[in-house]
Length: 142
Image (tube, one colour):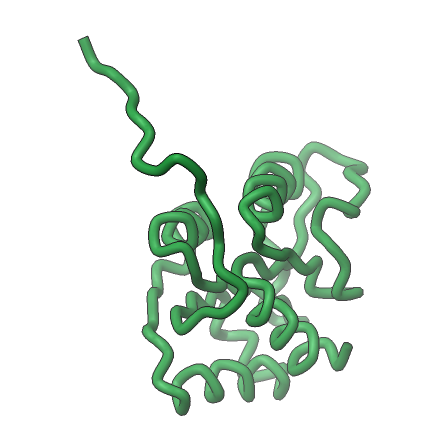
């Protein structure tokens, strides 16, 4: 039958990255900070990975050992990521691998979001710590 195997002894996400995965790019039209961040990544020749999906883009962070997935919101582009089924589980994996997460509101860890409903949604940023910090600074002003 089929067998699972470990591709690596320990999965780590490096603090620095040159890979970016922007989601909800429509938010750039309303959020100057997010627009500036996406421009920064492009101008500094980061590699673009774009699926717009949390699962494939965060798994890219694990396989490449670096990267950042950013999914902020705006009035016209509301939150889509489900806290209980997407944000919380992936935040735990990212942080255990040495990465960082941001709730894209306070700049705090996504693991600190209180779950109040099964369909609760949120924005978020996940991946290499330096890029999550850059997100918090440029998008949130923190």
